[in-house]
Image: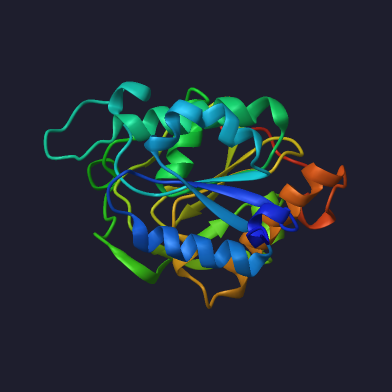
Length: 256
């Protein structure tokens, strides 16, 4: 019997985290975008928890996806009764980030995923940007609706090839104090953190928007291609030039 194509490992295998409930629209967009960029996507939900180490060992890269709010206990926030949480998913993603950290395999955080990367490294979150930042308009759209300005020496700007990108907005939380080894590389016009990345050569990037929905935007598709390139490099020992930006500035000590 012929093996399914993804079992031949001719493409890097990329895990994409999500909740047990819902999230199928975002998952299918991720799956298509990863495939188009040259990889195979594997959906990771809390049902994988009992065999997570075994599954994670087979992955070449990771996308920490968007979704429900992160439990406030992870970043010193307060519990709001109207906010939906997913503690099992929090556990899944924290364990995955623990497993990936010492290996150097590439990680991309999307919306909630960017916040989880920050919380995992000891950072905090703005619980609600509409309370913290004046004049921020209430946006909730998968379509490009706001501009993000990038730091000139950042890896992300080098990947996107843009000083400014127009992105979508589906969040009400954001990065506040930075976690260990991270830097802010993108903000919107109101000062809200929109992108973070790790200091050093490892591909560790978090974006506050949903690039998987921007399938007709070449700059956002380059982000996925760079992830796949970094995942391929981890399996071959190569170092793709397009994922490494020139000299890095020190991390901000306060981001909100």
